[in-house]
Length: 148
Image 1 (tube, helix red, strand yellow):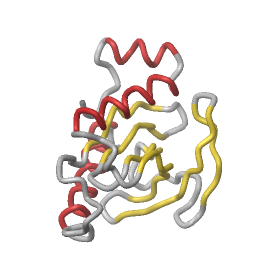
Image 2: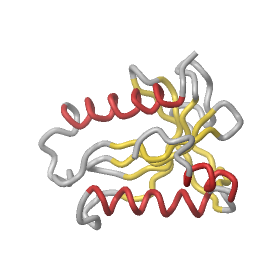
Image 3: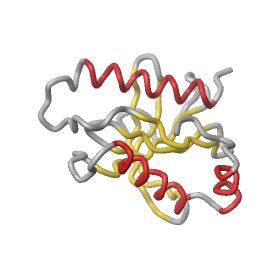
Image 4: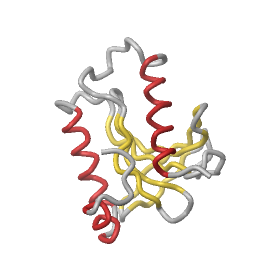
């Protein structure tokens, strides 16, 4: 069985590879940003929710806790999903080495961010607004985090 930290590491590794291959040299890449999974936490439905920061986008990501698990929407499909009282349009995706996941765009391109710290701070602020109080309390004590 995969664990939350392992899945977060897989997510980062896959998108670092994408940055180094498919996205390499594209002018929309922010040179001051890197791939980082920010504060993924279990949702209680077999998935974890967090933010993926890359040099070309910031997405809210619903990641199955097991690589082979199903996630809604299916790859190639899209649907609105409520998260913390807000509605986001999640798109089903699939990447080799990661499997299926769903992502909702938060920002792209990433030129509005001065650096990695400001992008991560924005991601954390959003997650704090989306999560119920008990989940936020857990983060104060360092529980449930994949990456800082």
